[in-house]
Image (cartoon, rainbow, N blue to C red; front, side, top):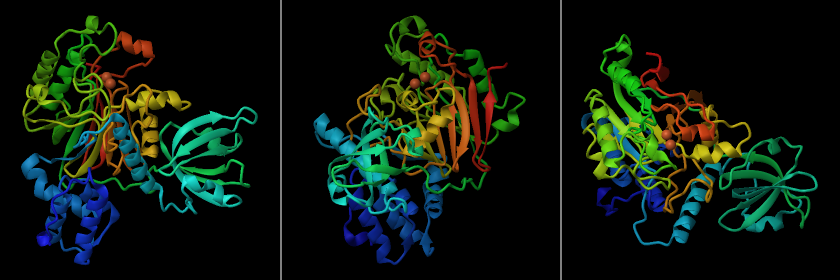
Amino acid sequence: MSENGVPPLDPLRTPPDVRETVSHLFAEVHQNIEPAALDRILLNPTPVELSQALLSAVHEPVLTEEVVSRFLRESFGRSSSGGFEKVADGFVPHTRKVTPEQGFLELFSDRYLRLSRLLRGRPALKNLVPLKDLRRHAGEEFSVIGMVREVKVTEKHHHIMLTLDDLTGEGSFLISHDSPQSKGAFIHDEVLGLRSWMPKDGQLPYVKEVLRPGVPVPREPRKTAHASRVLFLSDLHVGSKMFMYNEWQELTAFLNGRTDQAALAEDIRHVVIAGDLVDGIGIYPGQEKDLAIQDILEQYRELGKLLKEFPRHMNVVVIPGNHDAVCPAEPQPPLPEVFSRVLPSNVRVAGNPSLFSLDGILIQAYHGRGFDNIVPNIPGARYEAPTEVMKHMLSMRHLSPTFGQKIPLAPLPRDGLVIDPLPDIFVTGHTHTAGIERHKGVMLINASAWISETEYQRMRNVKPEPAKAFLVDLAKSSAAKLDFSAG
Ligand SMILES: [Fe+2]
Ligand SMILES: [Fe+2]
């Protein structure tokens, strides 16, 4: 098979061709491959090579996602990378010159295509029609998949009027004010499926059911075969006067087995830090007076010193946040070399968001500016209940859909904020609160902060819950919330 001259392609840039190429490779030798296993292969930087390696090494009648993960773990996992495998950074730059308009057009078509793929084939979405053809379906029930462009309330009857776009056109739909669907919140630029009915031509179609990509089948929590634990942290804000140094010392003592919790610290192989590693410079008005370290490189040097005190055998994975020294538009690239080189060698830099596996368990890490996008738009959503907002992200299968409001989006060829595939663990920070919950088999963690309250946060009226950490036992798929603020 390797003689067919197929070059190793990057699935992140050219998904349709690679998907076909890889499917073809397996079809040729009559090996069945589960869709989830195919997705897993396509996320690898060299899917064709990986498929060829799988075909020569694995001879099971059906290739499952589990088999692919095990293969990756055994071939590349423990030996070379200590169990860490980068699957995909959200940030994938254009390889050619494009205008921002072209960039956003590609970004939104990528989002639409990937999320609509998750909705297609749902039994509830019968008679799926493109938005340009709505008029032809008067008097019948039909379904559409579209991206929310506008949400209005009609003056007379207070119905919700949703205007959606797809790749063919646009269409408006009414959600009756007394229907259960009208209680839901709609976020601009999220992708929805609607089951609708149009009484007759010239009238707006009514929505009978709203479907989000979500988690259609709850997942069975996956576990590692050997002992392995991960500690989740976030929002260190090193360089701020409010950095909680004493509490951090407690954490360091714990990781080094110097506390009465030593048994818990055993088998910690990984630490994940979900962004806002340093406090940064010029992030909000008047920040200078909150800073203990005024120079950005010095802030990262100090971070390096703190991380050096962690046991050297631990993998430390860090992603940037809005306070870090990378472009603030999301997805954000990993920390550049000028800063990462002052961190210890066991620290791995990844983008925000990014998807990686730790001993074969898939982690979606995202700093969390999407909270600022979603919280104000969902009735009842609060920073203090972060996992509720994370559930909404999972339901949209998107971390921060809205274009052109508070959060800048980067015009990239691939929408790195789409949540696909579903992770085993989804971790965020940014809110400075803390939460953990298992939702449809996905473990949701919002990983606290190491900074006491700032003026800035008081302004936003968020009560922080700092100096907490979440310890996840990957072999048991269980978790504990650790509190370092008491001592
Ligand atoms: Fe933060
Ligand atoms: Fe943040």
